[in-house]
Length: 392
Image (tube, rainbow, N blue to C red):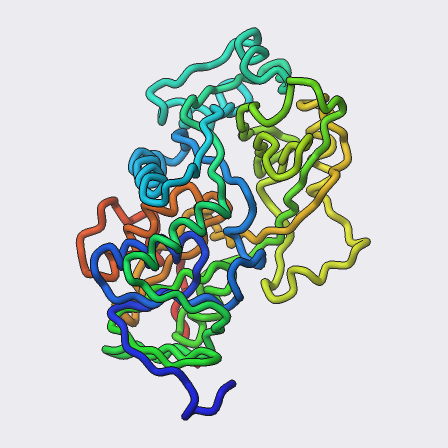
């Protein structure tokens, strides 16, 4: 750490910790509202250490949980607004299939979120997604709005827009200490900054940042295997660049859901992943033994044999991403109980990217003391017991 006399010292209207997609959108909304905002990132940008990197994420209107379904129309609108502002394409509409057993409660909730969305008969499914097989007793729900967000491009676009609104982004600065008060003091590896409002959106590192403030959040970082599978016949039209996305629900062989996206990152491959992983320390995520068991890959191989027979059953490429899960898989968007000028955005549980424009808006509204645009009850810290502890 630099000597105290060499540390940068500055004051802002708001400080945001974490320049992933959630923190970046939060900072963007604050800067749009003419708040002098500092966005801090511990790693040099761009990086692949967190939850916001990669070429692709699914976006969809359908959601089993009404709280998220209500947010999606505005999320689509704000993504389109960013596309216009950035003069670049951030989204490809492919359609999306939700696959599950007939009568599955989550699938039925997804259908209701689309105003009784279209159930595809086998013939129509074969036309729209010829590479996907269904089995007896299963149905396929169609979400025509579904598609792919270009994740890395989207993250760059919102950070660039933040800078255009005169925001300050400082990367390569690890937060060492947070001191609450009317003016919150944030000490990093190279600076000391103060602001009346602090928003923490640090992904898998959030728990460690708030623990010294007397808050023990039930956040579990997970190491996710991001798998790419080669097509058996590279020239076949069944599964490829123009295929729909898909997610599963209620399948006994995949209790945490499988999802897939058309090939973008690697020509001739398809991204198919399991929506769960292995508990990990974010500082240790890349230290897994090469020979360590990876049960999600075995599960995916069986799934592909059964549902996507046009793909090889061994992944050609395996990369790593982090989820940060809450026990109920719902977000945490709230003020710290002890310090009302410190806001938390955390626990996005592997489904937050598509909603980041709205999440950032909500965190901005909380920090400004405004009435949030949506009910915050599903995202309250108080839903978890025993989170308060003595400050260290």
